[in-house]
Image (cartoon, rainbow, N blue to C red; front, top):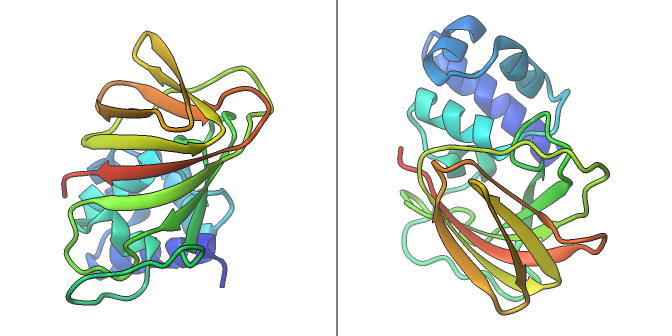
Length: 192
């Protein structure tokens, strides 16, 4: 089963376990009914902002949707062993700012408050960009290539070795700078 389909199944299972209709979950989360339906059916590639809104409405942490197992104690992820947990089309379902491949660095860690990922940031095909906004904080460290971070009305280009830490409630977007892919370390905190 693909990571996207696992997420779709988990959203449906969690929603049904709470006795919520799609409409009820939409009302609780602030997501459109069409977005939830498309995510649950696996028709669209999931994106971070709706996933965060849905996890809050479902009362689970983001990692519940992104990984399958839970372990007590430390989690060690060896070099080149990070498991791809999902592919996200930018940060909004309808965005065209490129594709982000997420590789979890804490897959299985029970009760975590941070979500650490390696993310491959693929170049965008278009120039229109939709900004994302959600509760929490994000830390990004560029490992390879360059990214552009649009944060409010500011734009920052970060190259290998650069980092940025920001409040994710401010509208923002992360994309490859130019037409070359980049790789970043991202730590996302989204309060439950």
